[in-house]
Amino acid sequence: MNMFIMVITFLSFGFYYAMALDENKYIRKHLFVSVMFLVVVNALIDYSVNVVFESFIFYIVVFSLLLFSVFFSYISSNHSQDILADQVTFWNVSSQKIKNKFANLLIHKEGIDTDGTKEEWRELREIKIPHFYIESSEGKQFHPSYRLGLINAIETDGLLTKIDNLQYFNKKGTHILHKIIFKKLLSLNISRHININLKYLLYGNDFYLEYFLIEFWEKVVIYEALGTGTLEYYCQNEKDNELIGALDNTLKSSVQKRGSFLWAKYLLHKNRISNAN
Image (tube, rainbow, N blue to C red; front, side, top):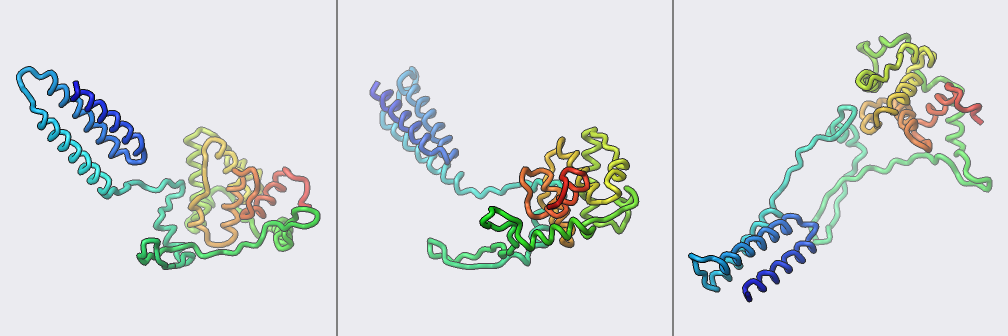
């Protein structure tokens, strides 16, 4: 009976210790297994008919199990684990491609870690972006430089590209950014059975490529949660960045600065806002 009480005590201690180590599942698992072994050994000691155990054998078994548990936990916690997974992306852009293209934005730094060792790391170079708005006595107002840019973008067609027909996306010299966005939207239009009439969509947007892609995007994201992440890899100029920003703005409740010029032009084109003042 004294042996049984000792095992129960050890069992309680094991469970308490296991709960305290919630962040280490390996130790918790092996402590649990060790305690279960102890229960079995205790049952053999108390109820075996053919085999008689001396008390010192029990202590040897306890010590051996504890030693095995600590050793196995140590091996498990120090075993290197490789994460075999691919980055999820809509646009077939690997993290290595992003790193290679934007390597010039990374700066190398070095310093001394808390344990005294020398460490090196990389950080993104700070990019200063003009303010979207300014605070005044009358409240928030567009920054003068942004307001001028917005008015210029609305009054001119510098952000727009006219195409003749949908064959534009099959031509060899077509910009890769336009091709990859159209290809993804087209595949979703077919697979999801959305059945958008693309010829009519292009005609309804006066054959402006950007308006066509934005409206196509709007109609598709209802059925598929598309994101614009990693599309920057295909950007070649500010016009490309404006298109990606406008696509991203279709998903947001508040407009972000990037793409806001083209987004405003699109809203005016679709008569969703009455004026640009």
